[in-house]
Image (cartoon, rainbow over all chains, first blue to last red):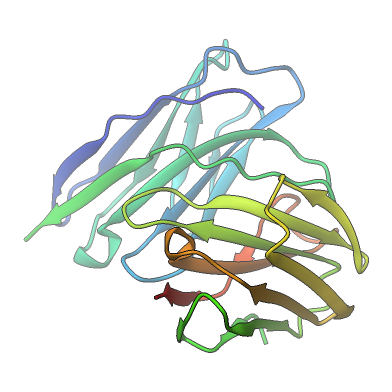
Length: 112
Length: 114
């Protein structure tokens, strides 16, 4: 699976959009970009994933550059409950052989 | 029911003890996983079970022994652990249907080896 690079930490004001970048310059054509987050003392939680196109769900939006070498997770209106470690993971979607390889992630702190 | 449950929440054991961690899901998922997470580190995959068969073992020491008795249950048997095995042990499951690649995680068992 391709390696990802994320900033170790970020702050965001409550109510503002939080934009979390991820570099994955060695991504292969069949690899998806997944985002998970882990709130303190809980198990990781799936947020969103995408292949080429931008994606949006009730939690977040995912913007993938045209060359697919980087992506940005956007939390549109951050709340204090969004304080967590956010992991960007790049992998092939292969059921039953799924290795989620977590990098060090970005520790996002939402400031009141 | 969209939960993965893990018991116990906390476990303290000596190096000569034998204990087991239990994970259960009733979402009909046919893949289940064990991860290990040391303090301030990301989770690391240990084992993957697919349709109740072990499909991935990430070179985990034999003192950790996984078992999948049925499609809803996953155990991790522990024997002769070392203090460095103290960590949060996370279980997850996933389905071929729905979002491919989405894994549902339990809250974890926090293990302390004395």
